[in-house]
Image 1 (cartoon, rainbow, N blue to C red):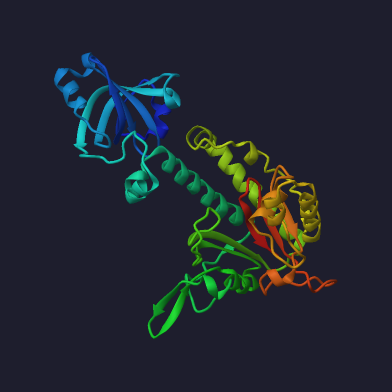
Image 2: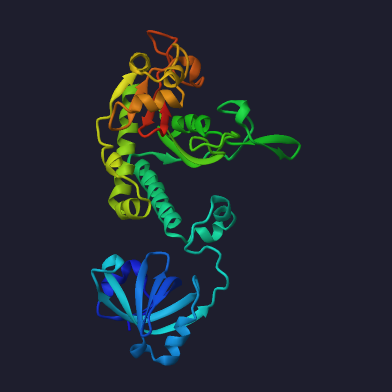
Length: 371
């Protein structure tokens, strides 16, 4: 016996008898065979318990197992192309660690409110499990990228004394005899850090007190903010482009199955995230939007796309612009009045900030803002 192993490494033990510690994800049975779907956090494997292999008493005990019961399974690892992962376990023994009672998340459809009320259990579902595994890879890819490119991680404070992105979206909290705010951005701290290290970055939670309930608004999200002491706008665009290609490539390499089979995500748009990205100025973007307004017969869209120089793009503008391209779009040189005060002005036209927004396709909008 090779001892307890993880399902993710089961392929290394073909022909061996092993122990698996996990939970009963699902099961089905006939009179003489029971098929157990066992998960351990690293994967799911089918464990086949035959009446002739385990005996009548053990077979009856296995039949009593409930969804999400904690179990220890002993059996022989065999290759089987029909099984998910290409392997299954021929069971010789099942030990009950703890019997689960009245597990609430069953095969039937459940509403969002119900699932959110049971979110601590919902994490065990394949979809939530896949999302968090992909996030894990993405977070590591982000940290690896900046580490490999000579950036120093400088954590910015979560509690701050003032606003960075505007006072209307601040979360305030009592701070002894005064008031502190949950951080909107680590930008200003990184500007100081870059003067010490040349290249620095922070990566952590960010808070915005926005009540809008859309996929483009979150009260808490994680944001990475790199800062470079000596870099022009062209270098900034190159960095953003290389960064996105690197981290998306890492996710595709490691999670194609989760993306396609579990999350039902069309990965073709992600695979098109390759250099070079199209780059257009704010002025050129306005011209494209004017052309779309002229061409469209949809009065609602025509009204949504109305914009004058000096105004920032909204969701309809960004969505229509990205429809013309098959990969992220970089729009640079925005009006200074719609950008943060720390954005450098253009030497030839002080009305313009040397800035860039990277707009993702499929209506996701701005995923990177810099300058």
